[in-house]
Image (tube, rainbow, N blue to C red; front, side, top):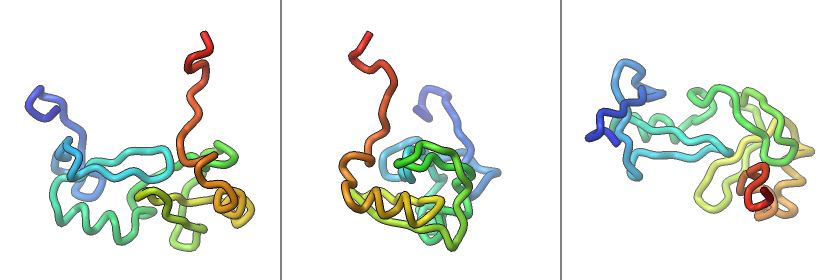
Length: 109
């Protein structure tokens, strides 16, 4: 993508473009983030909530802003934050039911 002239700013080093490749990509909830380099990637992974902005709760599908105290689970190599313990517990009971976003009308047109 970078070779095609597509640029996205890094969410950690905001003055630098992100590397749009798999090695510098991180998924948090249903959102995707790209980082400029390995240092930015490590910083992001230490405390993703500092850089994500609003996320989609995988259970309620409501938008919320995570904090250091937000409930968190890791599933399938992806970090998931929740606005409260209730949605975290629902996710933990059946993570595969919530780990992939539901796309409206997919295959139902």
